[in-house]
Length: 616
Image (cartoon, rainbow, N blue to C red; front, side, top):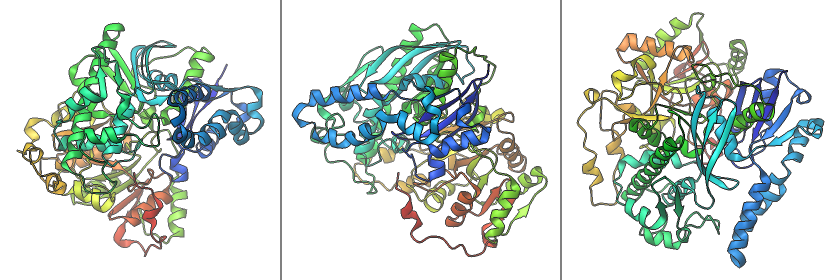
């Protein structure tokens, strides 16, 4: 008997929906891509509508709708929290009361209001937060049996969980509970360094190589007590998130010699060194935790999810330590992936369906969102009087595109299905030549309108990855960092910047230094966040990089998400065209249509459009 299950995440951050039929992932999309509100927290009605419409299913024909979090356990944590705080709990109540009591506790009513009478049939279910994460990591993985590590800010009570997946079954064996949280520790540092909590943690990770971990001992001695098995406890005297609106407090400020950095102000050596320090401590915890899990669970395989699993530097180090033979991380490891995990958990656990495990993962390259037909794209472009060239042969298009990329052009690449998760993987990407030493700063400042220091990923032919990087295997979802091979490096000594006594450092002067023969994708520590591209999961993107390789001898392209700072990744051709016209991109590809910026009519755009997007 067929099962059709809709998974929902929402009302916290990164709302999404996912549809699974008989255990197959049919679609999975984030609400932000439709509303154009980054990390949208609202109930994912647009994402749900896409999933059901794409599959041609009415809500009445679903076998279950499942929400990725148990709101009553969250309420239990909240009440326990304010009871402990006592008379000083007013800030916590002000912060959380409306969200919890007007929305999350009534998820059944919200779902019923949006899906109609369907939910009155009793088919609305909930999972625990970390079970949803674990399911999103294990069930799509290629493993019949695997150890599981989940680490995030908090889900109901749990912040870190370890367990095992075996066939149909998932068991979470041990937990670390709120307020002790590796994710919230990292977020506290994110906040202190002037970046946005839940959104800016990847910036802190990217900033870390510019600094030295001179605060690591301060963190270990004052903020977190780490045990040999990777378990830990935070010293709550230094944190504000437990009892106030703020992540840190005055005692935390005193520990690090001043108040938090103001957002958008200059980044100083203090922030660089704090970033390096918390990254080092995070890696230590993850490695200890992985060794403990390996000792406890008889499996050479590990799967991971939760926001901390998006720390690709830690994952790269974990792979190099060879604690596990195989590691698979859910591409949408944060809350968005909870919708997918919730749906899969109900299919395999509640309905007790048999899991079939093949040689590859079942994530379908994470290309699980909308796709648009060329004829519809042409209608839109014609309405804008846009000029385009149509190619009937994609190989000829990719040959042309390779010449343009090699000539220094920056290309918006809109092709096939939209990706699920925070990474653009060749469906909604901005592409460039990695050999261009000026490309990193140009992309950051002129295209993305963001900080100059932020690194870009190399999309490399899977069969060529070991020729350029100290890595063997696959990283199709851009979730693993590896070092550029020594023969491709150039002499660059970051330590002379790291050891400067001055607090202010000209970061752009560091960024523009050429560190390898692929400088646009080589970070200051010679690392790179890899995307390996194979012909099976990503045939068009593989074909394009192949043509670029034939032309230049370089099997790599710069790949970054198709958006500007603060904007969600583009979803529709309209989104892509607007972003193209607003920036210094030179060329736009919409399926098999090629557009040159210089040939387009004057674009009438809304005034102050950049103010529309809240800075991340």
